[in-house]
Length: 422
Image: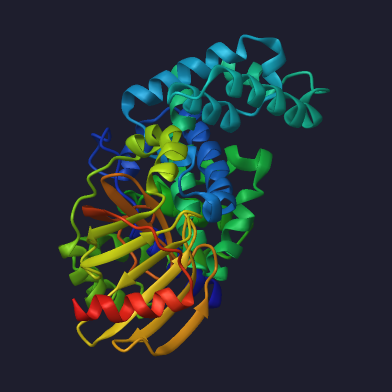
């Protein structure tokens, strides 16, 4: 009974983040899976498993990295990545590099990484991967060159979806889900058999409404000889879950009585979210300007509008790049975040008279920010969850003033009272 509860919790949570491929023309996920050649099914599953593992590993360091560009690749960028990876594998020295690392390297190069940095990363990857693959008769690059273009594309799609799922699982901080997927990470050479089990499960037309990404853990359990009654019960619950996916999510949660991943308040908040005015690709492109932006931001007072739960707020940055954010509230209690160019290190609350009511040291991922000349991006565990976990909140910079003071505790108290008296 416990294993059923864990699996159902896991796949339901994943269901909140899944979207069906826009290229899928079949009537259902199962029909789409069955129309794929076996080689593409295996390639997709290999990519997905490696992606989940990678997503769990990179989640804490994910923000602002090449993964943002990789996860939101356009069709053109995906094709270019596959072409560039294939070109790089023509060099026999590069054949020891694993597929995932090669595709990420190709992505960074296509997104404007300098030639010197790309060459240095190639040297590092050859050294790291050579330890595992140098003595093997056939190396990752050899296998890649034997694949059809469709198989390569299936691997890339699986890798992207898997990284998304891994990041999502890690951010849920639910050890039950991560323990379940540990087994899937380690499926190794048996992955072709697991892909075959998914295919067999879809031979029952009733199962074809279930997304294949939700069937992967079920197939793994079946591969490991989980009893038939448990598998059938899980499949029955998954079928019902998929039928209910068009219902409001809160109704599904209440019916399953498994978790409260989505509250009414969160659902209401989702309706109010505004579309972010900067794409992940633009974020990557702006990364090269970060040193200039840091220099520009010194001795500045930025007046920022949004996100909605903060409204108008104030960011002060002194000559040493110490950052303070003041969020004034109608109850005359201000939230003050003190930190660095990347995020908050301390959270305080003051009343309108500058009396300290609360103080707490923060972890690195509690509240993070990226400041540009036009907008500020915010992410972190302190903020309300979003439907797309990796998408940041944002605020528009509506005013800029020169700020020549030095930030210390005395100044923070003084500024709190001043802002309330304006």
